[in-house]
Image (cartoon, rainbow, N blue to C red; front, side, top):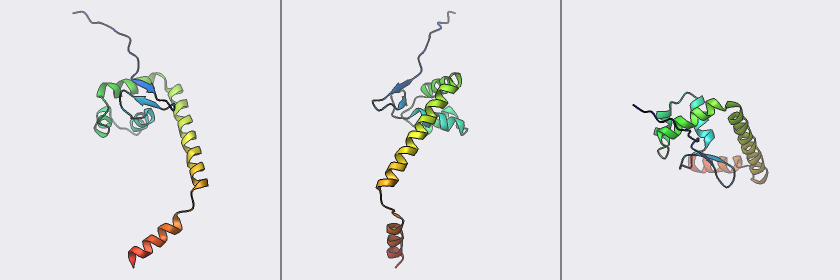
Length: 109
């Protein structure tokens, strides 16, 4: 039996805005890694995101385990970006709590 050992590249690609996506899907790297960190198995991740292949999820987790520092740095940058966007949105959007309260009072009337 001849086993062919091949070097495989991770199933990760960067989209035009700099987000890393898994395989041919639109699922973000951080989605897979956070689910894995929360205890989800690769099989359960694929069940949640049907556009993923099981081999891509296993390869992504393997890449994360071999490059934890780099992936964690990327995830930290993504979280900082998300917080920045959230702050900008809250600065330009009005406080919606008064609108929500008014709508709830109308519904209960």
